[in-house]
Length: 317
Image (tube, rainbow, N blue to C red; front, side, top):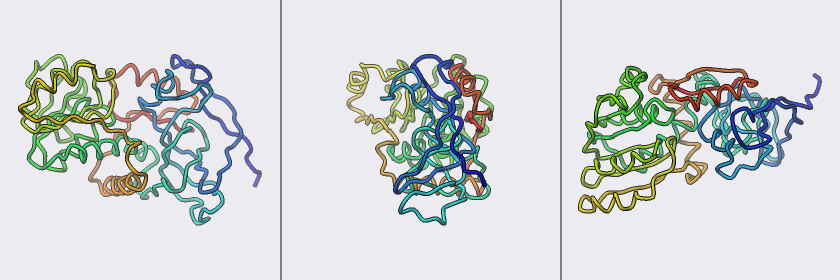
């Protein structure tokens, strides 16, 4: 068989709009010690990719975006068991918008046969962030939880996981997604801009949206309520967050931020394996909005930024 020497990949040459995403040809990557090369079958498109493209989150120009992929192991580096070759895996790192992806072997998660590559990245980071946010909040059965951005990737997974836990779930979402969010099991659905403000009190708020609305939402926390921010789709938390918390000081509120980067790799790997197993058993629903070819990465970013999507946008090399 002829040896590969080049791959197609999407490169961000300069920070800016989605039009900065361009299809390029790059040398095939080689795995280093403790690494594998994954032949990419699906790459997830997320807000992190958009923020990196815009010049945030420490990215440097001339990079390949994409932080999660699913595919088959096509090469192994020194010290890696050759039995991994051909295995179907999920991998997390940098450079996913490409035909080949290098990942450390310690973070690989083997995929059950019943979980497609598209389903794997639809779960992937979103489900992990939702899972660890719920753990951070200490959400318990019977408690009232508000999930913001419930039609988004993290929010929709948080709704499903909170319902399975036995919590009373209120989901805030766009009017167009209300029925689909309700179908995930949320007992209450608030349509932004249409249903007034029937807020709280909530024991827990899971928030991938942030933005100015946080100031009002903090006031809906019940005594000993916990507010967990795991994203900033509407902009970073406002500077007055501390003041809003002090205004409800007698309720002893808790406020925290959750980044998956702070979770030890082995904990992430174990949690991902269980989440994929739950999906394979039909207990967790992967939500795929649309699958686009790799060369349409710019269109995928424009679709994501336009909003109104329900489920994950996926690129297929």
